[in-house]
Image (tube, rainbow, N blue to C red; front, side, top):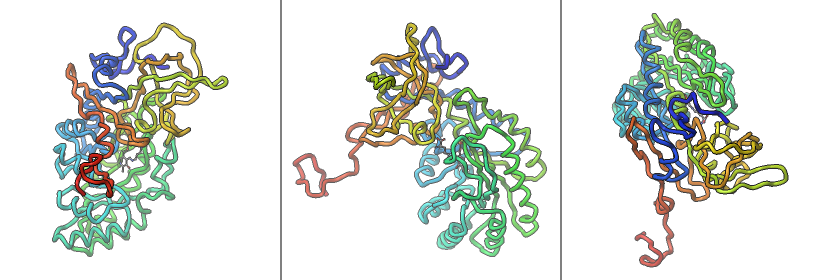
Length: 434
Ligand code: LLP
């Protein structure tokens, strides 16, 4: 169990975890559990670290909306100058609704629908990061039908095996669905040059997520920047190179990827190219700025094994069960010393794979105790679901001495919104007209 003493966002003061000046236990009294709590100052600080480290080159920090798309967070990042890396119509809507200007929006993803391409064009986004020949052809058709010129970058698959903790978050090697190989990328740029409704604006690469070493970024960036002279000679007026995201943070005591180190390693590759550098951090900005609070419901001993059954599980935070992701778990209020046991912290979902931690040494909590699951600001709420007809939790944002509920807990009615029982007689059983 970590002491949390070194965590600036959620320090332990007099035995109690806090978010800024607010005791987390107090937030639970007001908002219940399970609950997501975010710390705005840390989010801002992390965002600004990029600006500082990359100040000598023209750059855009296009925050990866998928990590945490809460409108309040997007809005504040947008105010600070952030752009957005989006992958769906929904994320386009979120980014625009939060006031992020279209000229700072980059549209990624392997399966963009015709509607998504059209809406992206209509919004005037900065570029589509194109992932296949089929997509480029479709973009051409859509742009032509709208009388527009579509700005694009090709996402290059550099065939680098990036050191990510789980195979699901590795995207830079040849066997993934992401990007296109170098030679095919050249062919696509060549093909697009002859099309009046397409305009090559940049080149893109993303090698995976939760990467702690700057060197794979150097390799990937060198590879794509190395392609630029040939493209320029052929007539493409490229103005950006997008290095993607994936910058790693500590979950289990490892050291984070220091952004200054990243800058030191990759700036020499960009400097002098005249290319604007686009970075797409998600987790790095929000991951450590969030905790998930959950209450112990029961303890259960099966043989020698202890289960700590809490009121949040894979429906609130799927990372442990989906990626084997580690999240530190601590009592919100430090209890008087108790026996340390090896436990599984499990949720209420009807799945054996529903756990927040396995084989974890914890001072055995008691029913009613509150636990904080750390480093849950990224891919926490964003991947939450209604499985088992559970209401998704509230999200609370701490801004200095102010507290904002930035998303209310879902209601029971929210769970059936949009559903109908076609044969139900109106008036009986509360059916709406069909
Ligand atoms: N850019 C692109 C093109 C991406 O695909 C991703 C993440 C990012 C940026 C941001 O990556 P980040 O900086 O947040 O690591 N759900 C997984 C992570 C999936 C990441 C998918 N793409 C997890 O919980 O670890």
